[in-house]
Length: 474
Image 1 (cartoon, helix red, strand yellow):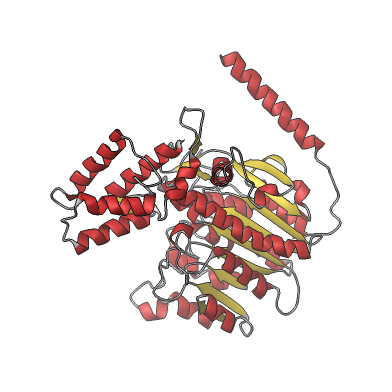
Image 2 (tube, one colour):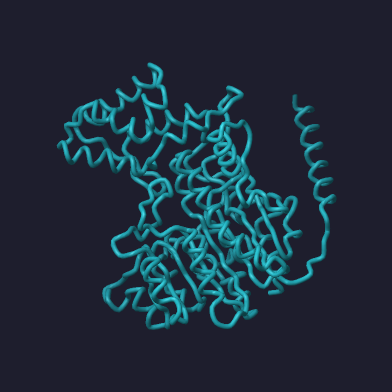
């Protein structure tokens, strides 16, 4: 058995070598004047492949229906370990993708000795390009922060945000800020005051951005007041007036190309792929990958107008959850995930509302109606006796006496009954997870445009910003 495994690995290595050397080594006619750098946080190869197979199954096919970015002509895969850990966190992973340097877990834009390291975004600005940093989570979160900030720990949210004017980039966008105020002189420490004092226009919501973008020299785009500053809603939970990653990407292009056309560097993070994977929420995850692809389509439309001067690169900082396609039955049932209409997190909110409305005296029939509406149970999804019994047991624990204690995941608080229902749907879809944390799995790399031929075969994550710098002439 061991000999067979070694033989298979040797054959795989040979295939990779042959494939890599067979790719055309076309010389780039122009440097990349416009660079898009998309990072799907937590997006491993199976998150991409699983989404494509999900789309296929919903169209009645076995196999894949490719996402836009998965059709790009150059692809490879990257390792993600940090300087101190076999499994990276988003701070070290983001720093590697931003600076080309390995560092310790939790570090933001600094080396292993905590000295600042220049990011590719800062190099782009020094080369005369306009720079934008965008994300679907908070602007001071680990991945976006690695491109503009230099701090010893990712949890220094307020201090990270104060590095925004130091970097001086033209465009920042995301849900908001985790710690807009800090310290005894709270009003004086408000990050929005600091940003406005340093020449930034604050636009809260897409409509306000449209009103302010033409006259602003530098701009910060966030969600409207009253919306969650931690992140944009999951795509599966989105309401009509919510800001989207595609809107953010379009807004960034509009802002970075107005006035003198000096070219730009734009990093866009799909941050909530990771959050859904931390929750092991497969249906929410595939919707996040599709939403990420929709943002990439905006960049691809720009590329089609400027094909010789535009480079688009897509990768991830790490894989999250150890997502597995298949649980031993030599089959998948991914189309079952289409019956889920809310994230596990939002389903927990809905269960919580029932608790309040009924003073915790919630009937089983109330839960049954909720799960039928939002997961398709007993309607489009048949449950066997064991699955229904496990739901009833969890219901009895949750509502039989004291209020159930919410379970904390990396970024969410969840009702035990919502977790149980999500696990059952995963089982029905025949998908699995190894953990609620990160893994050391390879992450995919896709590229198209000027210099895209550099991005094929096996690479380390630190090589990706170096290749972009080479393609763009930074």
